[in-house]
Length: 301
Ligand code: CP
View 1 (spheres, rainbow, N blue to C red):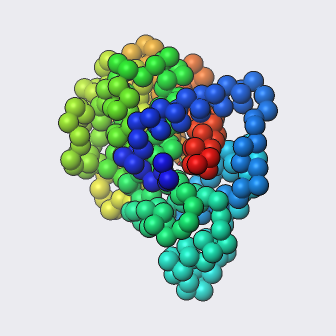
View 2: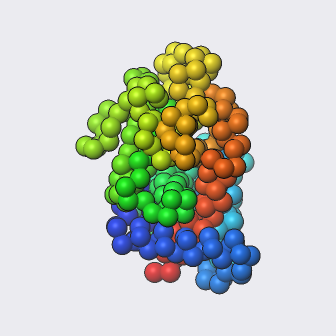
């Protein structure tokens, strides 16, 4: 494993080792136990060309928990504003010899370009609507912790599937771990070419019954043509996750959301904040141990 640019590039044994190690780190962090500083003396370069709260902070936290130093390169104050190209930016920063690059970019495949042009491991922190592999790994870890296993679970991914890199990575990862997936979306937000075995629904009332977890997604208006869907209120009325809809999935069903949330558009306030049925902050917490395990795996080679 040289890079983590997408779920398809992750071999099953590496995936399983990362999830196992992430669980060890999650347990240690929860108990407040110190973590061995396996990355002391290493420098991780965070290159975020799109905004982020969870992913950038948790990569920084993960690297620091392992003893590494982190540079948060800032696109807005960089020489991109003077006309320097993306390619020159990458080769310039590579010349300073970072030990790993974490990249988020709006363009499809930007992490692969970086991986092919730098001398260190590259981790995709989200590109376009294509992939967000560490989000899918932390979602899998969160489901496994809550249910005690993944095989046989049924999970519905709902909302803006077409523009979601989180959905794209989860559609690859979760079935490989034994999860039965359903996709619920308005026709305009339903992607084409879904893998065999994934059931699709256009109404929540049809797709939710029998689900163990309901993963809501943010409406990605920045990647959407204007007028593709109706108003926020119309969307919430038809697709928003309320307690009634969560109960339709099952009385024990849980709510997930990768964040950032559009409250009362994809998910009702009282569902998002329900400590018994919302795993949303657990997902956030698991971002740190999962990214620790990924950094360790890539940098220990
Ligand atoms: N889930 C996620 O990627 O959140 P951020 O955009 O805040 O990193």
